[in-house]
Amino acid sequence: MASLLRPDTWLYPTGRGLYCAPGDFYIDPGRRVDRAVVTHGHGDHARPRNVSVLATAETIEIMKVRYGARAAQRFQTAVPGEAVSINGVTVTLVPAGHILGSAQAVLEWQGQRIVVSGDYKRRRDPTCELFEPVRCDVFITEATFGLPIFRHEPDAREIGRFLASCRMFPDRTHLVGAYGLGKCQRFIALLRDAGYDAPVWLHSGMLALCALYGDFGIDLGDIRPVSEARKNDLAGGVVIAPPGEASGRLARRVSDPVNVFASGWMRVRAHARRRGVELPLVLSDHADWPEIIETVRDTGAEEVWVTHGREEALLHQMTRMGVNGRALSSVGRDGRVS
Image 1: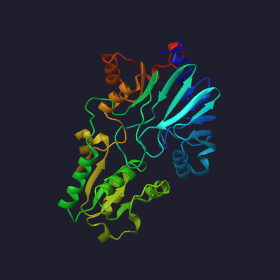
Image 2: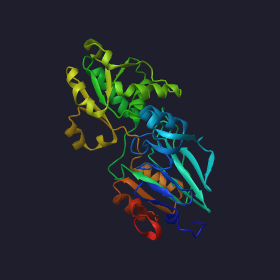
Image 3: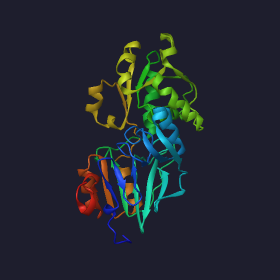
Image 4: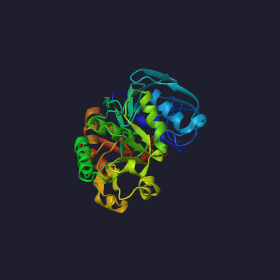
């Protein structure tokens, strides 16, 4: 590293979240704080009631849709690629490729650069900007799928399998379990790219966020609330619902559905069996094992801090690559756990 300053003396986890001491702000805090930098709109990263939030325009609007007046007392919009100074720390948000508006937080202070990835993936997604690798001293990576077994299939292959099932069972409703922010919209967009132009029926809890995607220029085609559908409308159709609803009340409303679940966890057959999934689709909004390794190489980081997942295998891989890997939970002032 160019500087002799230890990065864990100015950025480290605390009880409220990842804290930047010289800037006096938190990244994706888990509890209410005065100043937050939010990487994206998922609830485990974007929590309500912070005093001040810096985020992309899309993330801000997602928070407003999800939380209403509780979202934050005030917002500051960050334009991707444009630097903002917070108490002398330079903060730049750079596309993360995870969902609409998702960003990596690039922090620069006293000659050091730390990149906080948030959640990310490397493959093309028609609903968000492509991930941009940033050279840095320290890279903080998620490890949701941080095991060698996790190698996501090409999107076109999984959508092709889905459409083949629709042709094979033209009278059955395909009931897709997908998370309401990111996965739902991406799944629809991939269907449209593959030529599927029939109505897609949605659980009511997904409609507002799909409308917001439309506001940002992402056309999802003909989407309709499933609550307004007659039973005959759903025969041979596609219904998307949150995972719990897809396996619960909504499933009981549809006769003889094809139960589908779109997730990186569908790589593990036991997960599909436990959920009673007939058609598991390996579609994820997170980086798989090869993408994580590729990203570490692209950043050129001498240190990699690992969080959000199974850390052990990835830390072992960092050692093999000659990179100093640490679990983020072990990072603290003077090397102590905070």
